[in-house]
Structures are given as structure tokens and as C-alpha cells.
Image 1 (spheres, rainbow, N blue to C red):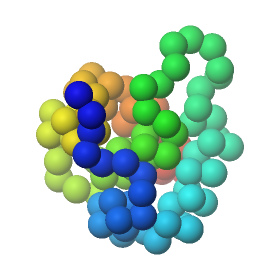
Image 2 (image 1 turned 90 degrees about the vertical axis):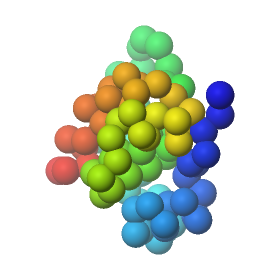
Image 3 (image 1 turned 60 degrees about the vertical axis):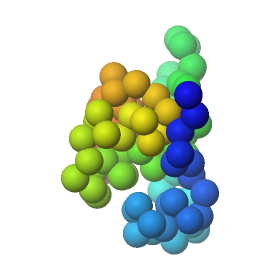
Length: 92
């Protein structure tokens, strides 16, 4: 099952309100703060840019985790893990 949303300029600008260059800086900051994790363990099913987009869409819109899951082609449990992991990194 593939998702609809990916971190391309149209979706980023529509759902986050950020221009692509600002979004790229946000992804860079999240990566520097440890957004990719310690390196061990199971790899994420989404690239970091898509995970940042997911967390930003979650906080900016009023969509639930169950509503976001099919948009990104992942389970609602994965949405929860992404938001819990990246949420604090976006807030700093």
C-alpha cells in the first residue's frame, strides 16, 4: 500500500505552509538533533524528509493518526512512533 503524501514541493507547501528551502533547513536541523536515531535497530519505513512532513502535518492540521496513516501508506502505530520521536525535535 503506497502513500499519497511525499516530501515534494507541492505537498510540503500545501500542508506545512513552508517553502521547500525552509523545509529542507528544518529537515537538516532535525537530522542534526538526532532525528535518524542512533543508527542501530530496525530502519524506518519512511525517509527522514517524509517523517518530518508527517510530524508537521500532524501538528499543523487537525487530522488524527488514524487519518494520517493511509495518506503516508503506513500504520497508525508507525505514525504515533514518528510523532513521538520527531515532535520534541521540531519543538526545540
